[in-house]
Image 1 (cartoon, rainbow, N blue to C red):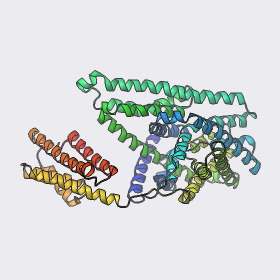
Image 2 (cartoon, rainbow, N blue to C red):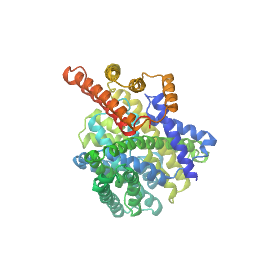
Image 3 (cartoon, rainbow, N blue to C red):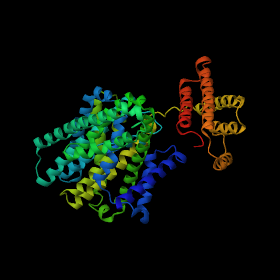
Image 4 (cartoon, rainbow, N blue to C red):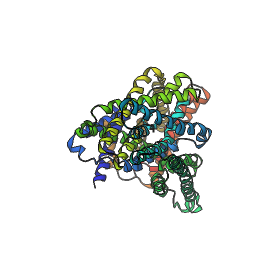
Length: 534
């Protein structure tokens, strides 16, 4: 019951943060808004008591895994294939160098033992793709660095986990088993790739078999898409927990599954357009909510950790020094690695180095240390140091990118032109509507709907229409058919108007045409799918 209540609180808070961001703080990344709301939750005793203590297994399995699955679906498998060498270099070579540099620096500069220093260093290596977006919002991130950061963040979690396991065994046993560590990495990463590829291909085959079955088209067995949507939602959880159960990387398994299913979505959209549209919308909604929950949890845990006197007091201010050392060591190694080995220009190398933001996975790995034989005082040091690392990795690039990256060019007149063309398009449809030999009621009702396309209907007008529909009897089948015909005619008029302005007169841009044409198509789809007055 506690987990259910926690989930409900986080869901409501996530939706609130999205609304606040879109409505009142559009220039601020939703990630910062979510962290702020999470901090507020942590300092309000009544609400804070409703959220359970942080559990790394639940957090990674139920939130991070589906997020990475969605992120993988947004990445073409072909892109990964063309950058295999770079991925291996960044997620194995660079991650290992970062861990060695951060571990040795922490030990030399602060005096902590090497095993503990390498625990701290291993946790500091994974980066977070969703967190990167929070520091580049409103800025143009070079394409090469954008791709490199995305691919790195998708695959470097496994390296961090293996290095952490090695460091913990070193801490507990007093020695490093290099051959066992190498085998663990190969088995975990390779097994995750194999498990993800095999199981996701099987799931893909089952979905396509259901989608393309003759029975499907004969009697609509799966045409409503519900069974396929359920399978879609279950996929990341089956992949993650299944992979973890056999001892391979669940994180890599869900990423591979997402990559494989990317091509499936591209080549099966027209087999069931409604299903494809619904899954696309579901993907966007769940991605936004889960991403918001990630930073809500970060905000909650950061404040809880800070307010916990037993944790904050641990090792005095040593955690501040270690957090700084971890951040600087990772930053410099990332810069030097791509600058020297990948021959990246100076400015782009700094962008890549600063763009390696730490977030959800780093925090989850820090909490896994509590479940090992590491001393409580050392765990407190790990938790506080990694918390500072996360904060620095977000704040520093947020400031520096303001002058290092150019602003995204916003066409100030675009919105005005779009509204003007939309209004003329709607008026063309209304003119066609009022020339039809139909009832006055239908003319007024459809006119209201058309003017709603441009936001030219007031709350009073909506209230009047709402009261009219509440009192109105259901339309007869004949009336519904007539209404559908009317809507098709006016939407066709709007299309013709747009095509004339775009193809014949060349008065509007391709982007503007596509945006408005998409609006008409979506409006018609809603009307034809759900009807009016039903």
